[in-house]
Length: 310
Image (cartoon, rainbow, N blue to C red; front, side, top):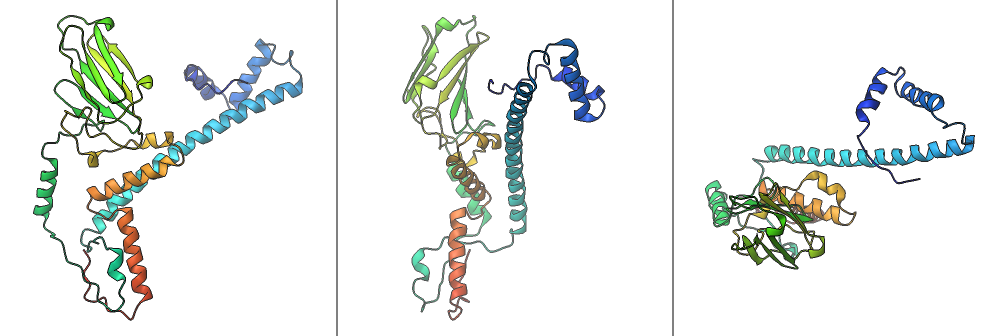
């Protein structure tokens, strides 16, 4: 049998049949097989075993497809629930003491008190630090890229999309457009004009998998396939102003496209990024805190009353 081909071409017609048929799915199937019996040679040209085998195979293929779709829906739901839980935890922990990073050798000597210094807790200082980090950076757009003067770009972990208005008073034809891809260089322009983009890319790409098109004679659209599909670009070309990649918000739906090894790493990266933005400990910070907590439980004879953790 052929591979599964998903199409909604007949959905409206089939939906009408399903709504009119009695007894739910059973009534719908009765209508389908009644049609096959009355209007086709479905039953006359095949033996019973061949018919059963064909129907069973089709049923199994679409059953598998249904399960896979449900898994993707459940995965997206779990990620959404986790985001809600993290926000709730943030509200609950606003008045709780923070935890600082503890070096492994802090608890090495059992005979000494563990004392750590409290870092500045001023909201004003945090705001100043954030402002300092954002100096010289452009605002990130909804596509995790930036809207610049001559073009805009967006990105996923796998690819970058660039949209370049031609800004020409006359209609531009595809043959007038110059697009050159190389491993880490991009050139785009209109024949006879100064190139709109001509520079070294932030990261390497796969030129053979990159494409471009001219939309309505006014907009050049590029799709660049990243070589390293585990990192976010802070800019398109090295001469562009940077975005703050800590503010990147990956699409949950894209996680379903990742392999079993890559997906946990991406989920960890997403989790740690959210924790940092909310001023909460990352997964590594939590692991160190758990180690310290376990050590304290194993050594009740030690005095931790003077220890301060922030």
